[in-house]
Length: 247
Ligand code: 13P
Image (cartoon, rainbow, N blue to C red; front, side, top):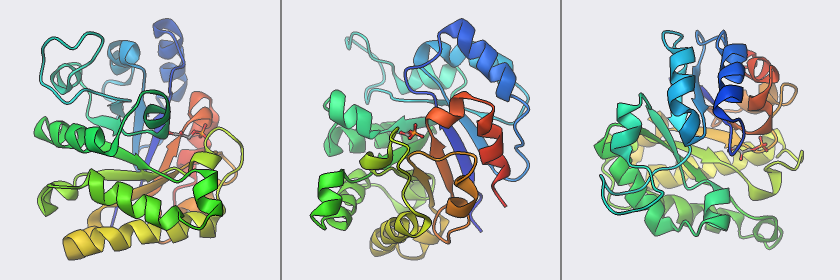
């Protein structure tokens, strides 16, 4: 039985002092039914970590570099994340692929490096509207998953979380229907089954893209959707309603 996981992706929002306020607002989120994670901007990791200490809420980063340390101005290493109390790291978010030249190859390198440091990668995949309209959404996602997991053992694959985030649903208010989201998450599990056999049943797959307090319950009830990666609605009290939607 896969435990559901609801993670907030705060993106580039909240200064350190604002982040402390938001973490205080959300720190009583119910962690009894699912894993709950706050993926916060790098500069907010330490102050938010202080606020949520002892709550059961996991601390996550939104990116990392694939080297241990060195002359990579502006980057943050997995070693730094671990030392700061981070347990999860989002890798390959579509915004990073789109604006910061993240590729399937760098995603794969980052996943391997994160695993080396026992960080849990939340790996994002998803198709653009144009790809969906051309009928190539499945091909796109199959390829992203295969390249992300290249060279990763079954034992490691089991630790990874995948977030299916259709690009057309991110920040648009245009959520995928329960069936659309389920169809793709099922296809992702099919790919994982081709790669790892039965282990695919243990890998958690989240849906992300305009999830809110009203549509979360329907999405989370689908057979292959194991929770959500939440953007806008993770910055308000509504995040708790989303968590409460986990049955
Ligand atoms: P929204 O929930 O704001 O659509 O963002 C989804 C997302 O990109 C989470 O990573």
